[in-house]
Image (cartoon, rainbow over all chains, first blue to last red; front, side):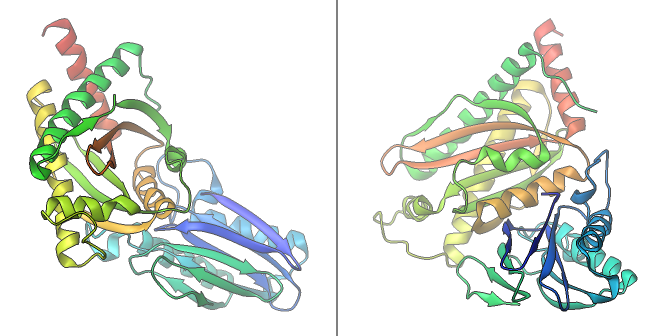
Length: 149
Length: 206
């Protein structure tokens, strides 16, 4: 959690067992380069200092990392994953998963980065493998078919 | 603000866990009609992001029953059953021959939630008797999923209000089918202070 990694041609970026957390993948529409953020909460709460733990500040860092690799903001595309509501306690809209998805979409929209695909919400965990060259993610969940996003 | 646990507090929390989980194990034993043994509880403070490290097996599917706790003590309780054993516990509970249950239907899910409910209620009852702090669990929720997904979700909830989690961790083992369940009691930061204060009072005879 609170992780950010980047990859280039041939790399696979992976996030295991994502529940309510949010995974944001940002990639270049042309060149084979991508970054993956794994954030836990929509925004800073309490005394947390690790920016990559939060969707809002984490996406800022993700975009910076992409620019450092040589991508322009106009070439960036995004895909988002996770934000499940693993336990049916409390109401749906208040769930951390739901708020994570909303926040990620809000920040990406503000930055003008189009969201090209998503597999979010619902009540099950996901393992995400993003293939940088193919610009596609393989999403695995327990007892469900593999999805390509 | 990080809470420092003294050795005295750790001992006292372990004892509290022992009494709570002991009561819960007795309830489980009655429910299943089988002997249930109990490990010595582990008491630890862990950073919320490190909670998942408590689980040895990665990428495994578990059945997790999750409850929130309300009252004098607020917090969370999480029970983890390894997937390969969870059908056996349903068999025992529903008085079926071992090996009968093959999938998680409505009945099986209710049975597991009910176990969670009974275990945590008896856990909290024991604590109430011991320290005079009364609390009740919420309706239980169940997830059968990747262990990381379960723990991350609970960690995220705790991270919204605190940076560390106090875990009181107990293993229960049912003797015939060797079914293991790990029970985590995770009081909120404010409740931790209340518990520690109550423990200090008990110790000083107040």
